Length: 200
Image (tube, rainbow, N blue to C red):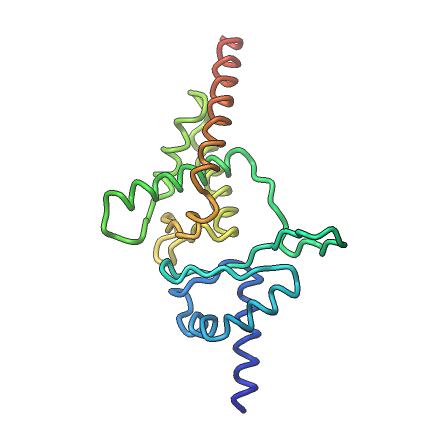
């Protein structure tokens, strides 16, 4: 195989992986090196289809995001769709982001590993008392699978009851997002308390 063919194959692999989601250096170090070597070409190609390449070399991940159209011409269709997140998924994301911030402030370990039990315990605080615990566990597992599909966490291969919080969450869940969501949590808890009072 010629050098040109090898470069073309590496470029295709990089683009396909990026279009599928977040790329991590620890998941495929060789492909990560291809990305760094070919990033100018990847940026040019991504721009042609309305995307920009974002790389965090320090944290070891890369992703594509849609370019906001500035001109008044005809807009390109969105290749990466915006997701409307449910309240439980948003709540879990907020809790995961906060837990990562606490972890970074108190631990020298770069990876944050949590048990699903930890997540159930965290989310139970925001649910009415007397909620069926088995139902909560099943729902949390379902929500975590959605979050894993989004690339923010991954289930450990050695223990499916544990998750690793991926550092890409820092990029998408920032202080402003958390502050806005705090307001929605307060509104939700107030509504729950009122509903419980009415039922009681």
